Length: 114
Length: 109
Image (cartoon, rainbow over all chains, first blue to last red; front, side):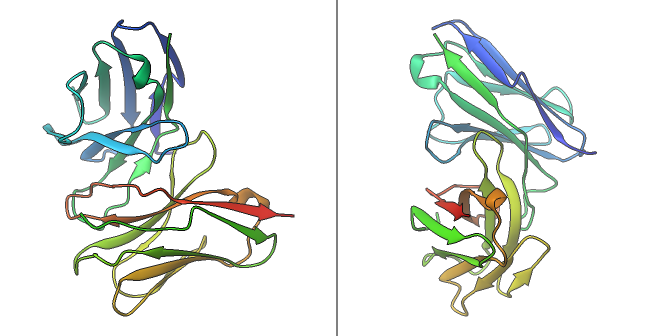
């Protein structure tokens, strides 16, 4: 089945130690998104790629970066994780940027910062 | 940005219809209304979306008022597995989802 895959499902990192979360998709969608979801809160959009074009949300901290080496893969890099970055990180894809394209979410990676 | 307002929580008896309301009074004419749900510790799951007309699929029905300022998601026969947080999202042209606080639906046996 076509799907959005996130690895690992659980990640533990130390305060200040860089960490990379990965997302892959078999849907061949042009758009990929990263969301941050803290405990008991709604998902918050960090940034998205439309093909190779990167679009950062205005309030996304500089500590968060992303890479998309090809259509199938997208990575979220947290350069110096703080305790406040502990959250579920969700990857999503969509076939297009138009307003009628649903987003397909992966299962998420739960990040713990010690 | 168009914002949504939903009640924080609702209960529904198993087998009954669950009607989840959403206000989106600042919606623009070309903005879609989407509904997603999130079961604990999983990624959000698409339910349904619409622009002006009412929509129905195998999961739910979406009723959008004529002025488009509000909508209702209807789960016709709620089951225990429908217990989740339901998000109403008004989608901007660039397909950027801004989630509201959602409604936590509890289906009671």
